[in-house]
Image (tube, rainbow over all chains, first blue to last red; front, side, top):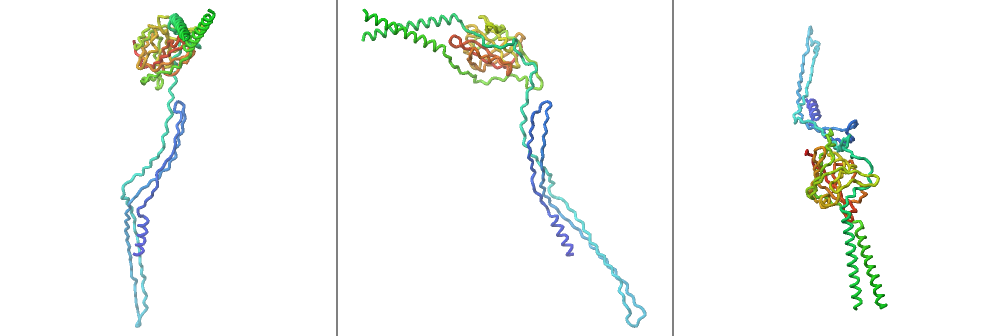
Length: 184
Length: 199
């Protein structure tokens, strides 16, 4: 029975609720390039997953120990004296059987590993090229913008009158200045 | 008498010198280039309908301008086709209408800059440099469409600056007239396309 208890103890220890802890981690950078027609992109993501699950285990051991002893046959014959006594054979059968059943009664946890892959910004789509953009009506190199002057005659008249007026004012001013200094 | 004559000479020389200085200074001031900063509209221009970004390329609306209207500065003019003479390097021009520069793209909702120009006079494009934020423009075409634009910017450039002639990029309308002293500059007023509607 002692042996049996030892076995039980070892079994219970061995099946004590266990914890495996680690983390789910994933790191990958997936570079996507041109995604237009005839593009070729290979995205390889290598991710290591590990789960952490806590279980509560109940160990139930049943032991049946049966011993069967059968006595031998003892016989005497023809003697005043004590005859020979021969013990019979004794058979002892000892059988021990135990079954272990582990029932997972913990929360039925689902191992979820989330791979964190940094998203890369997809390249800006290249707008399709207009096969027929609008073209100028006429072609050729242009060396100057249109000369959209106001009125040339008006400008000349304005400049002429302005210049004459300026000259007259200056002349009068000069004479006045001269007379002033002369009078001193 | 001799003294008076000498005095008169000095007076004459002084007056002439002053006049010359004045005239030279005046011309130097007028002819010196005046840097004009580009004026930007503070409003966010409405982005034109993007035709080329989708999976399918839509049909392009385009046409030769026949009329241009800019209500805020009182412009409502017929538009003729203006050509460039490579020999004397001049453009078709008259005093009755505006002109579509045929070296630029026709008005369209796809790409490029369309140039319409006119004289800087009253009744033509004389008030064009006075355009301000929020201004709109409409261009009628021979294809029976009205292209509506919103003002984006105004800038003064040298006559040799032909960078407005581009076939690529978003569709833009540019109105041009002369400006500055002696009309030595060109004012380019740009508009972004807003919508295209039937007449």
